[in-house]
Image (tube, rainbow over all chains, first blue to last red; front, top):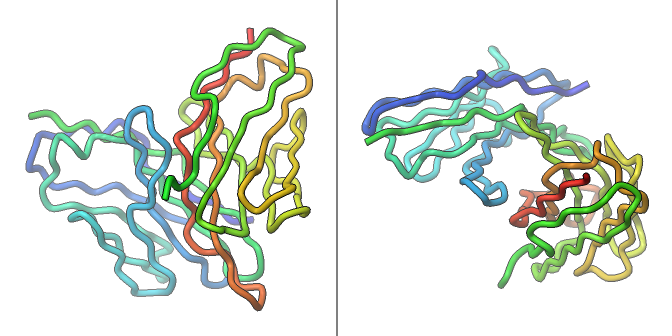
Amino acid sequence: GNSVTQMEGPVTLSEEAFLTINCTYTATGYPSLFWYVQYPGEGLQLLLKATKADDKGSNKGFEATYRKETTSFHLEKGSVQVSDSAVYFCALRGDTGFQKLVFGTGTRLLVSP
Amino acid sequence: NAGVTQTPKFRILKIGQSMTLQCAQDMNHNYMYWYRQDPGMGLKLIYYSVGAGITDKGEVPNGYNVSRSTTEDFPLRLELAAPSQTSVYFCASSYSGRGGRSPDTQYFGPGTRLTVL
C-alpha cells in the first residue's frame, strides 16, 4: 500500500538558517503530494502541494518539488524564522477514486533566535 | 467562513463513559473525515463520509461510530471509552466534484484533546 517516510526530528536551527526536511514515498501510479504544518495547539494547515511529477509547490517561502524518479518531496526554505517552529507532515493521496490521505509521522522544527 | 469547527476543545472521560465529539463545516464540502493523532505519530483515519447519509470505515474504526444526517455536521461517537482512545481527534472536510475525481485539499479543525482515565 501507499506509505510516506519522513526524517525524524526534532530539527533544531538558528534563525535565517537553511531548512530541508526529507520526505520519500511509496505509491503506485501518480499520487498527489502535500506538506501540512501544525502550529502548537492548532489543527493541520495545508502548506503546499504538487499533483504531478516535476511540479513545484510553494508558499510562505517554503518549496517542495515532486520528484518521481527518486520518489521524493523534500521541503525546503532558504531562511527560517522563529515563527516557523511547528510540526511538518508530508502526506500523499492516490490518484484513483477516493483515496485517503496517508501521513508521515511528522517532523518537529525548532527555530531559535 | 468559520471553516471547520470542533467542540469540545478538551475532555476527560472515565473508562466506560460515552461522549460525542462535534464537527461542523460551512464550506459546503461533500467529504468529511475523522482522524486521531497519537503522540509522535501521523494521523490515522477513523471514519469518513462522502456525503449526507453515507459513511465508511477508515483504518482504525473500532470503538467509534459516526453519522452524517446533514452536509454540515459529522459527529463522532465513543460508546464505551477506553484508555486506548486517549488521543487528539481532528475533523476535516474537502470537496470533490463530479465524475469520481479524488477530493481536493482537506481543511482541518483545531482538534479535540481527549483523555480517558
